[in-house]
Length: 194
Image 1 (cartoon, rainbow, N blue to C red):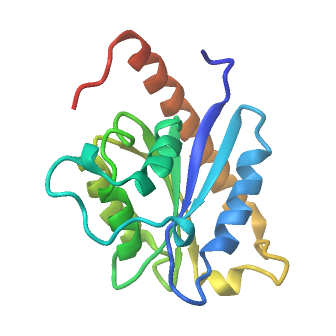
Image 2: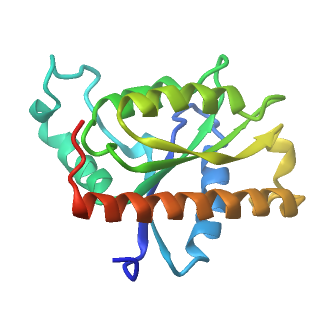
């Protein structure tokens, strides 16, 4: 099965007006798509229409509008979340999105790409690690972080000093690929039970 590319869903988490997330996500998707062993499905939360209220207890009772997104997540071998830091954490839009699904996250790796002010979104990254652990996903160690992100990208949407972030993206994708392949193979031999 290693000959089948690793399929990653790349999630743009911010829905805030004037957001910078699409710039970071486009840059990251270019890095990802340069690897012939990877495929990508970008999911922008601004385009995902989920009801404000979650089902009472059973996520299998979700409405039809969530089914298409569930199928996209289920088809993924892993995920990359591109997130800002808001108030020392990640956006509410991302928490709402994560909470709508359960089995789709399980036994899959998650890479985290963050951006923000002085902290570069790293507090959002640390907060997300606990949330993804609860839904039985594995966050990889390496991250990509952009401190003062708007000052780090040119008008063309590319980093002004690409060396460090290019290397960080490569390390993240290498770890994500390893975990995705290892977990995919493990699940072929023994189903994951949460």
